[in-house]
Length: 494
Ligand SMILES: Cc1cc2nc3c(=O)[nH]c(=O)nc-3n(C[C@H](O)[C@H](O)[C@H](O)COP(=O)(O)OP(=O)(O)OC[C@H]3O[C@@H](n4cnc5c(N)ncnc54)[C@H](O)[C@@H]3O)c2cc1C
Image (cartoon, rainbow, N blue to C red; front, side, top):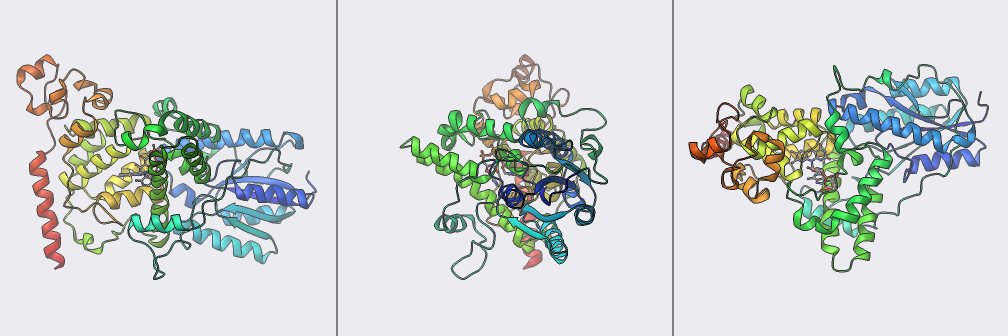
């Protein structure tokens, strides 16, 4: 058993060895104190409450990959229990129990920014420090901390563009740290530690996530491969084609960033190197970096508005006359709205755990505007089905779509799902991929099959109302209903 003093590395949404400041501090502490590192992951109620079906699937794979990487990095320690230690329960109790039972002298972690996590961490830090432990947290998951970015008047930003300009005036994000070459691991068994299977993260009652695995490889190596592939192959076209779901141009790094398998610093500097190496291509790199800026903005907003998931930032929307149309919600969830671009997006989501950003905007708009379903219902569905479902980005984006958030799309600006489809999927290739019933529809009608003549529908093998639904609402009718509801809300709060 280990007799050397122990530094705990508490992994949470930072499931990586590279550019991990807390892990770096733990290994440094161990080197300086002739000590060892104890890497732990605790599935506590806070983390558990932030997981949906798709993110549970991702987390299991990611923990498996991290366990392998840790075992590899610790191979020189020749410790029997040299891997990631998995636990489940109250994080504070578990960390205290470990410190009671073993010679723990220090605990390190990387900071999170949602209120349940910050409250938990503050509480735990105080308790561990009372016991005389060294306890330190690090900035790792955001480029700028929420308290670093302020308006000239010292207030928090509510609008993205000035927020991002202010970020860019701050000292540039630091260079990423290399992964430790080796880690001297503690050779102990922790009371209550469990196997990965016992965390019960795998899909149930059957493996419904095979399509996820075809698209993504969770884990640090998968994240790096995805990043390099994006930088080498796709970043060059990002600014021009990022809105096109029929072109696979965006990075698809969102689930990797969600679980911290790669850090925003690694992504930021890779894009910066690309810009340096490709004079004249700075615009596309800046556009991509600005999207990382939206991620920062969403996290900052959540830090300042802890009830972002449930309370509209613009208070008047508490009086919005949402409908309780469960049939419309179900048709939307199943990709059966009769709007091809919406159905394609919802089916892509169901099969792969991912949906293109432009399509997220279209499906979101149709739900909260044409169908008048509450944005919280959309948020809940995305929370369960997206592999990148994230407390900050998801809540922020749904409030944005709902017209009630920070720097939101005004509610009265209503996407027309037909025109959006024709603009961003002009040949209908994205629709054909995910809605095979419409595969043979001519381009002219692929986004509005209900306008095709019976002859054209027959030739394409489509019978509306039978093998593909009639639209759940008229495009114009839904738009007018939404505008009336908006006016009703304005009047009720006037
Ligand atoms: C209704 C709705 C719900 C969303 N829910 C989530 C969510 O739960 N998790 C999530 O990560 N993103 C969410 N987004 C934002 C965005 O759609 C995804 O981040 C993006 O599609 C991920 O694909 P990508 O990695 O290829 O993005 P890229 O275009 O390659 O962008 C790079 C990274 O920047 C960040 N980013 C990009 N766009 C946004 C944005 N609009 N807001 C915040 N961060 C952004 C992501 O971390 C992304 O990985 C949502 C958007 C909408 C409209």
